[in-house]
Length: 226
Image 1 (cartoon, one colour):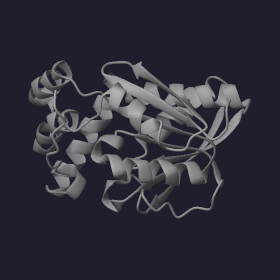
Image 2 (tube, rainbow, N blue to C red):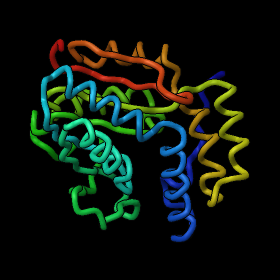
Image 3 (cartoon, one colour):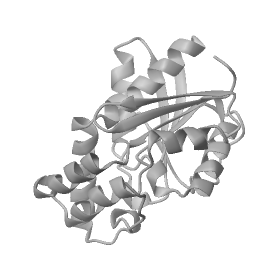
């Protein structure tokens, strides 16, 4: 299935405040039901285990409402791992500022406003498919600069079955933005083979790439061989 880039409405806030709010609620439901929360938590747990760290500082890039970071904090705390998270997003309108555990920063993901080696892990969920290959390499290299231990990413796998499933789900979405964006996201996502080729060019010491629950992949770029 050929990769096709079409605009996603939520990216540009092309909706009323209620439509944007409902689309963010849709996204939370998708992450909860179809593996987004568990994927990021799993990747962070692998980093903690292999690095021998019981505490991790984590930058969630394009993290929006902070739902993914909050779930990661909750899930890893059950394993005795403490995560101190910061959410970075370009759109301040997507951020939920009610959470007490998470700092929030509005900034460009391709120019992270952080010192080199300032956080253990830099990661993202459902962000990579928004980027073209050259932009993704720029993001990964910037993330590797900021991370002390690893960069993690969870995103969609592109194939016809997944596109059909996303399209069929339109009847359940709250927002017309999600009805456009869900199938569009799958069409512009990458395959595992494509991601492997990109990961090999990032400059990471090594990487792990595997399929995750319901048409996702999980990627870890290591700063040094674990």
